[in-house]
Each structure stands twice: as structure tokens, then as C-alpha cells.
Image 1: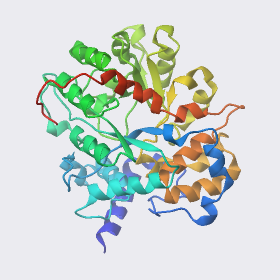
Image 2: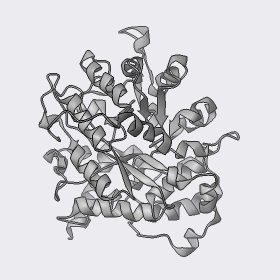
Image 3: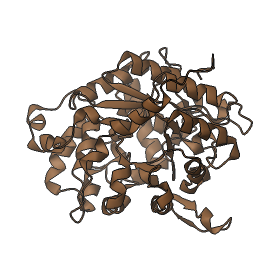
Image 4: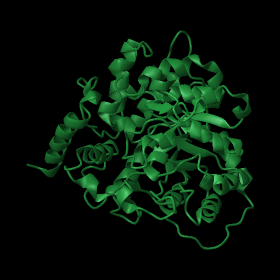
Length: 426
């Protein structure tokens, strides 16, 4: 039996055991990405593709949520916890398998990191000229004293690697750094990232052990304001990576502290997954859907110019029930930013055209096109789905996809702030 066949079979068994609910809508579209390199001619010429780009300047389209995945087999410095290679940890094992397949790097021994980047080039070439991907670094889990904890780190993608790819491939990439605020050198690391072109900071609090409401973060928040860098922070439940810090760290209300310090905060996925405690009602407050807490923050006028949401992942099968809410809240739309959450659009069980049709937010007539596009270009699939979402006459405006001006504010603010010496690039 070929190794790839064995791994795929093992992954399917593991998925059935620990994530079978995700298979509900996947029966017609398969489990694994086919990794075609281009659209069939009749698909590429479908008028719905051109229509999706109407009113959008592709040069302004920066996909603000792209995970930089690999295994560290090149010079990337990426580190993946060895437990993700063991069937004794079935959920993490299958996560890694599906991420590599989604990035079409599952069958490239010895060159996984390189293949993942090449696939992103291929996908961007299948969009309109000018589109860029914003690559996310991911710092390690740190203890409350600021010490790295490798045992509780799932995946580590160094800032230096993301910065290098953006420098070497400026036609395709920008980058977003990740700096843990408990690090002793966190401000120096942030300044280094700003000087090397970082457009924002990414946190995944539950996976990194970050409490956004901790006083330990204050000096970091003040540095973000000084440098003009926004904070892109996951909020709500997290299924894509292990969360040793606990999902409570992703409570949207914990982002009040950076907002009060003047930081521009982007809530990843608009907190469309899971429940969190209503901290506004005290330490015994009830648990409510995380998106309700995000909605509460969005309604507070003092945060109007500082609080934003990204729409990455909102069409996933475990988040799609909130699509109508996002479409109906027209007042949110000027404060929403598009991201794909790549490579997740290539994880076949996570997205379902059937479900979107059942929810009546996608025209059934688009099903064949969307299925065909997804087989060759998950980024284009994600874009087409979002551009065609409709509910009671509401859709997502073109401005949500033109994110470049938002992030260029950071580069203007941070120019002229010299780095304060040599730091660790971890």
C-alpha cells in the first residue's frame, strides 16, 4: 500500500472518530483536495466569475488571513509538535493531514514547505493581477513568566520566515507577524517586525496562552498604538489547532483592554464559533454565543473607529449558521475585512455548497460552478462564495474585499521608528 493511501485512509478513520459531524454535508464533494492546477476552460469562462470581480480593484485585494503552513523541512524554521504525527492523538493527527492536503503539500516528502508556497503562487495566479496574500506567522506558547513551552506549542511559524517570503515574493505576499506579549523582548520583536514590513500582529490566544485582558499586555498594546499596527486576534471557539490555554482566552470581551488602550483590533471570524462567558455580567455570568459578545462590542460607539472583524472562515459548516446575521448587520459592513483562512478552504469537509444552498444564502444555480472551482482553486472558491452570498436582498459590499488601505495605514505610521537593536527572531 502506498504511504499516501495509508495516510488518507487513516485520516478518514480518525476524522470519523473525532469529527464526524463535519462529514454531514461532504458526501457529494469528497474528503480530499484534488489539487488541480488550473480551471477547465468552460469553468474559467463562466460569466459568474467575471461578475464577482465587478466593482473590485484587484490591486486593493489583500487576503488578510492566510496561514503559513509547513513541516520545517526547508529553511523555514517552522516547527510542528511531534504529537501531530501520532495516531494516539487522532484529532491533531488528522488536522495536520488535512492541512497538508489542502495546501497540496501532502505528497512532497522533503519539500513540503516549498510545495506549500508554490501552491499559493499557483492559486494567486488563478485570481486577478494584483491580489496578494497576507501570510500569518505564529509565535509559540509562552508561560505566564514569558518562557517558551514547546510541549504546549502546536505549530510555530517564525516571523523571519514570513518576512523573508514577503520580501522575496512581493508580487504575491505581504505578512503579519506574531509576537507573544509575555516575552521579555516583545516590544523589540514588534519593532523589528514593523521595520521588516509587518502589516499587523496575529494572536491565537487559546493556542498561545495569551490573556488579552492581562496587565502583562499593556506595554505591548502601547507599542502597537505607537507603531500603528492593528491586532488580528482570534475570538470564540477554536477547532483548527490545540488550545492548551483554554478557549476562555478567546472571549471577545477580553479585547476591551486593547481597545481601551487605543489599539485597532480585528476580531477573526467575527467570533462565529462557540460560546463564551458574559463577563459583563460578572464572574458568574452565563455563557452565550461568542458572536453575541462581538455584536455587543460592535454596537459600542467608543469602538467605532477601532473595532473590526474579519470574515475568514464564516462559510465553514460549523460557522455558516451565522451568515444571515452578518449579512443583516449592514452597519458592520464598513468595518469588515476579507480573509480566506487558507488553507482551510481546501479542507473538503469544512465547507459545503449543499449547506449554503440549504440555508438559502447561495443560489442553487451556482452549485456546479462552485464545486468545479473548488477542485482547482480554493481561494477563488472562497471569493466566489462570499461575493454571491445573499439574504433578504443583502450582500457583502465590494469594500470588504479591498483591504489594502486599512493595512497600509500601519506602514505609514511605523515608518521612521528604528528597531532597537538585535533581538531573537523566534
